[in-house]
Amino acid sequence: MLRRLTLSLAMLMLVVAMNASEVSFTVDYPRQVVQGSKFQVSFSLRNAEGNGFKAPEVGGCKLLYGPSKSSSYSSQWVNGVSTSSSSEEYTMVYRADQAGKYTVGAATVSVGGKQYSTRPFTIEVLPPDRSAQQGSGNHGSQSVQIDNASTQAAGKQVNSNDLFVRINLSKSNVFEQEAVVCTIKLYTKYQISQFIANIQPSYNGFLIEELPVSPNLNEIEHVNGENYMVAELKKCILFPQQSGKLTITSGTYDVTVVQYEQFRTPFGIMRQPVEKQLQVKSNTSTVNILPLPEPRPASFRGAVGNFTVSTEIKPQVLKTYEAATYCYTIKGSGNIKYLKAPQIGFPSQFEVYDPQNDINAKPNGSTVSGTVKIDYTFIPQFVGKYEIPGTEFTFFNPATRKYETLTTEKYELTVAKGSGAATQAPKGGIEQQNRDILHIKTGDLHLKKNHTYAVEGAGYWLWYLLPLLLLSAVLLYYRKALKARSDMSLMRTKRANKVAQKRLRQAKQWMRSGDKGKFYAEVLTALWGYLSDKLQIPVSELNKENIAAELSRYGAAEEVTASVLDVLNNCEMAQYAPELSGTDMESIYTAAADAMDKLENTKRKKA
Image (cartoon, rainbow, N blue to C red; front, side, top):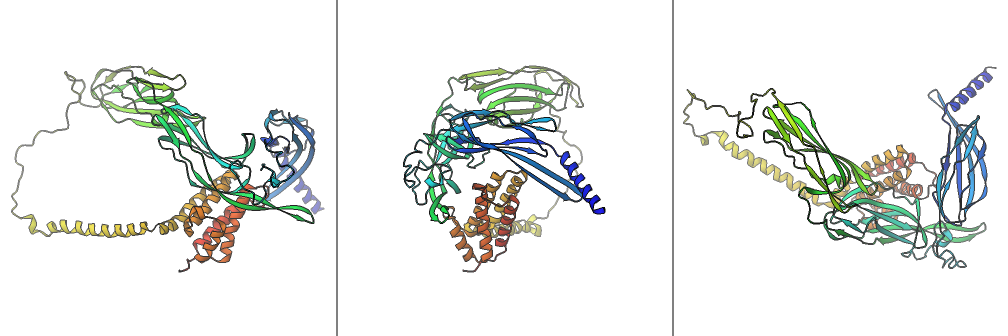
């Protein structure tokens, strides 16, 4: 009887916890598919049991199977608190028949008399590869296609149409200081297991505003009749600083692609992944920079974009010798981070301090938008009425190709008597009376005669000896530090763990936020960089075989070497083939940290 009562109470608590959980109805779908391929759309109902499921129609696609319903349930008891969750998943299988972009409506399901809907979404069906049918009877000569391992045979030559890096510019003709977006993308038909930038493109003649990117192969683009998996390697907003033709130089990259070796077995044809190392060079890209029109207005100070200005004086009641602030605010988009403070015509009876800038701007689309607040602190010296004239702010608007001038309002100020001594400005416009020079002192100054020569005292010679000793100590320390810094291999080894730990802390933040792509990329970067610095392996020669050999020469135990290589393999598998990976972010992070700790505690073998 007691056992039944306990079981009933436990079931009741689980049901209550599940009912308290939030019900949600979501959809998981591919944003891009290739015409002729099959794909799945899954609708997930969490923490509820549904009925009456209705799926929307997907334009340009044919329903092959579904809906297929599956259910799951989980519960846990931690520190006396019970939590549970359940889910129902409805899976639809489609075939993409017609290229185009299609907006898919909402799916609906009923839960306890209440209807839940998913949000509408868009699927893009890309045309098939132009060369998809070439060599269809011979896989060895068939052109490479994404998501088709039979066309990616091991030993097959990877040509420039299968893998390339391209620099894309949003505009080819811009004015000086006008924003232009530069995007560097990797286009590939193969899966990538490793990507290392050897030489980054240079942006001579530009100011750069970096944009965040996620370098994962999660997009497909149709370029010149072919489909490619695409990853953004770098994206930034450029502000040209001079007219003429400015060239963005090419970069070089070490890329490891995955091909497949096919062999027959009693169970059919099997495929084994084989890595192939390549070096890829990006294109160069040129921007034609147009000079700003002449003549330039006298009030133009380099602002290019579209802006508004406003001013304010705080406080509104002014008193002598009490600080006040003239606030000059610029809002808009363009080269706002690089604007110069305007010249304000303050009266000569005001003591004015250097302006303080507060910039709050960030990338917005293809430019930078925000606010620049410039505060001029001034102190009125005399009672009276004064005027701060309006100020002209001129900017060049690339959209209209014209200079536009804005004028701020002028201020009529009345200064009342404050805590200072002077109350009224003297005639003649003197800026400020000197009140900090006292009258010359008269009377007995109590002067004494001293006939002792300084060179006769020990303190005189100590003033020569002490600086000499201090200079000698500084020179010895400098020579020792210079010798240590000249040993580049030693410096790289010393900073290897520090740099790697910093990247692992960043990876931990991505892990907490659930961003798998950035997490795995950060862990890989930390490990490759750490091993390159620790083992003194050039980046161009950095691979697993060299790492294993150098670890053995370093004196690392076989288990340490195995743990390092396992972390690299698991991390790459989780990043580039997450569906085949059985590891999670927590285990990979722990394994990476443990592997570096073991290597740090390994004493280097003497040569």
